[in-house]
Amino acid sequence: MKMKMGIIGFGGMGAYHFQNIRDRLDCVEVKGIYDLLPERCDLAAQNGLVVYPSQEALLADEEIELVLVATPNNFHKPISIAALEAGKNVISEKPVMMNCDELREVLAVASRAGKVFTVHQNRRWDKDYVIVKNIYDTKRLGQPYFVESRVQGSKRVLSGWRGRKENGGGMLLDWGIHLLDQLMWMDKTPVTEVKAELFEIYSDGVDDNCKLYVKFEDGLWAMIEVSTNCFIIQPRWHMSCTDGTAVVSDWACNGKMVELADDKDLGWTSEIVYTEAGPTRTMAPRPRETTRELPLPEVQTDWCDFYRNVVASIRGEASLIVTPEEEIRLMQVVDLLFRSAEEKRSIRCRI
Image (cartoon, rainbow, N blue to C red; front, side):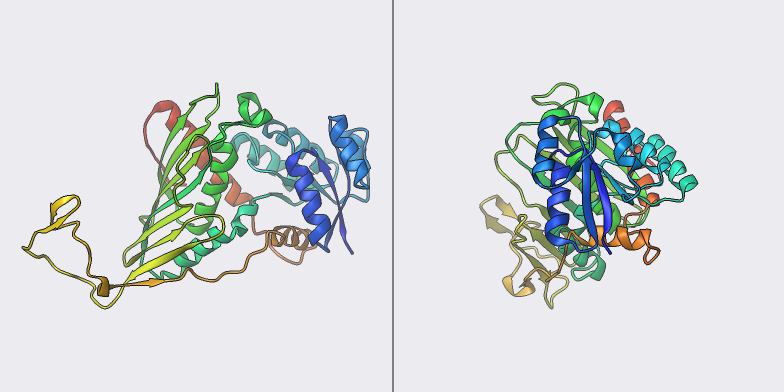
């Protein structure tokens, strides 16, 4: 039997959830929505959904077991608390809250209510990410030690509330938190150092571009870049490992791996090689026969697995994939990144 869900906030993401669930899932049914904007309510009605006159009316519907909170970020806390206290299980859009203290408050309410609370970290199922995680997990190219994760565009537009500080706008809380969650789910060792550079190139009060640096206890350094003012796009992923390099060029997952072949150590030579960069020994081209080019790993992913897991968890049939403990750890790092940018320094930690 399908679990009935209500959506609070039927904007772009709320409507996406509804369409994805309607078209692809057999375990969840969206019964209705609540939204402040008449045009969004009209769209919901046109799609056969119940349009509740108030948030309280939606939460009073006993058929609804699960509530999705898809509002601007600063409303996640009060709506989540209201839904949990009304006896509903809750999925919050990311970022889960404005900071870690807010998240702890909500989780305390969820614990008292005995309800499931989780976060829509759907990008753990992105194919490009799952490929990189596979390379990390299998150590196919040796030990990874530096990974670059980028999402870049050039529209220079922070849509609606995403451009307002009071709503929790900016790229760190928009795309940055997705990319950080991916890395922290891949490398589960403690984060030991962070640094953030937040740029306000054409906006006021929120970051429209950001560069985030995160070090893990196992030695992995990660660099996250989110750009809305980039006109020459770099690879989505670049991973440096002790015995090779992997590149995922784009969302379509074009790319390759290059690994060492038989010769692990070329040794030092006194011969100087003349290249376009001039005379060099260190950066002389590696002999072609000492490397091997490989295709990226084949992986299968499905964003709908997130919903399936949440339903199974509510029914007591599975453990959550996106856990409260992981979200606390994530928000602790996010809080430190904002502090790093404000104080203009790197911060050592153990999270």
